[in-house]
Length: 215
Image (cartoon, rainbow, N blue to C red):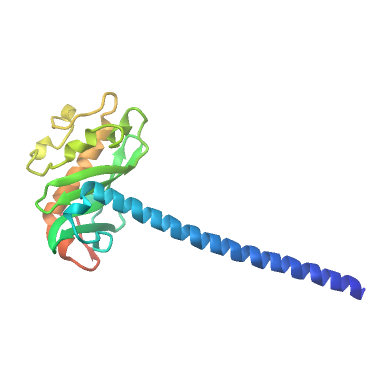
């Protein structure tokens, strides 16, 4: 009987050691993987920012110079949005932040919008969408040059009624068979520009989190 107990105890000890070792390995792998994912996400974000505001134009780290603002009507999100500030020699160069067009043909379209200190667009890049391949996906920079038509645009170029697709009387092209997608993107970028015009100082100068409403 005692021999059987010893065998049972040994088996339980071995199983316990295996479980402990396995748990430790999972924790190590998870920690390493999480760090690698976070690092890749940081690099991808910085790459997106630099696509709009070239590194040669700034001397700060936009990922370390940020402010969080809440403006659902402007940003298309109920959550606080991180605004990345680009500077050179302390001078304001541009801000880059994420906006969401909630009314895409197949759902929300997430974009990085860069706006220069003088109110001109540094550019726009789509970072996530579910639009139809071959139609709505032309909003991607790698699929067409359509998104580059926002470069250097401002609230004065075009005027307010020009911020629409041509089918609606605006200046921006629509896609054959896919008007909803570009219409949603144009409207979201216009909202971002209007917000910047009303909140420029806060976007550049506030050092701590600030909640505001779209004005």
